[in-house]
Image (cartoon, rainbow, N blue to C red; front, side, top):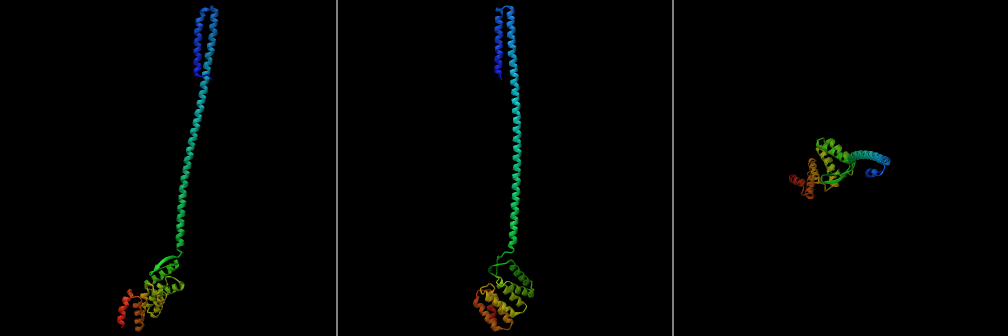
Length: 261
């Protein structure tokens, strides 16, 4: 395909040929000159026509290439836009997935915590009562607290039944020394002094170092006084002063021992 430069070069040659023909026309006779001029013009016209045709074809081919390039660019732009849309959609899916995953993890955490809380209600746990720390079953702790609550309300008969039932149901419970002490108090409140002494003595035998042990000895002495056993009361109070001299119960017992003498 001829370029623009080649077309201009052809036009230049035509001009040169015309100049030469004009100069040589005087050398020929008129007929020969006219014939030569006509032939030359035909050649020039042919060259011009060919140059114009070549230029037209070149323009058409260039236009076609430009159109193809534009279509390619449009296609590429469409592909890029489509890719952007797909990437945005995928980002949206990723964000949605991340949110859903976070929600699932949160639900799992809540379910696990709820399950652990429910299980904890049935699992043994450490408790501390009257200076003693031990492991107790949930039902065990619940029954002891319920019996003690009844005693505090002043329903000594029902408290006595509840504490007696507790000691039978949990014979190895860490609550038992405290249960024996409060059972003795329930009997004392109902003037069942002999039964009260039995329970206070059971506490002293099972746990002589228990926090309630000094009070138990003082309560035994009180029961003995109520039973008109002054000698027994003096013996118990002497035991109290000897075994637990620094206790508050010993201070009270010392005064009572002085009055019994």
